[in-house]
Length: 340
Image (tube, rainbow, N blue to C red; front, top):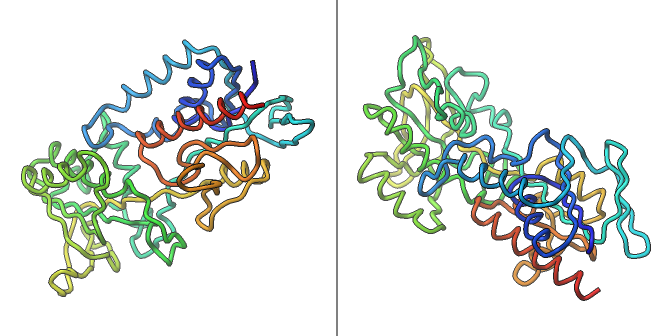
């Protein structure tokens, strides 16, 4: 039996831990937050089929109860030193662990919308992010705006913090487009009289059933998609918003009053990923995500032998892709340990 330490207790970390435990290894999961599950805890329904997030989290919790692996919450890695083929690990809680392999599964952070000042996040009352909206869409969430009224016109802004030189993120966050489609449909179901507009650069519906959901949004729910990036937003006396853009398909400037604006924020490599990279002595891409040995054949391998990567610490991923990448990481760890 070998000991593997997994840094990160989100869906990638849990799935990797379960697979390695099933393979007969001893696993310790180290999670900086007080509970497991990562960002999944903050969402209500998942695209493209509106599966309740609770269904996934309950199953993950059941796996944690059924599998015999150790969990250290509210804990971070302080140092990792390699000696005689083993990893000597010290945590923020002064625990000392010895591991045969390490898996980094530190996940991602959401782009901080404050950095896009022209959109007025936390300056104007009715500018929120997709993460904020997800909380409002949960049972008991309040969707009213000024004077307790429901919004009549809502704008979604795609690619906030992604594909954007000003924010320093040139990459696509992969899931923002379909998140916008999902949330627009959810709002239309809750507020059938509302007009909903999505301002996009390019719609990237890469996954199974994503394109079908996009078409359904237009044909069944009458959600309008406008190709153009917003240039600015300003608040009016009645707390509604005046937004300015350009319809790049027609080549015409556009002004619109809306009651609510939702910023679809992208994924970034978080501070936890940077700290783990430093502690493990592994490299990062220019984007901040962890560097893999080979994009095609070794996407779970870091530059350091015995240190593996799982999930969205390597690149933006959907929940489904994250689970598959985690299972792949477990398989690679198992194979590597068997050769030793």
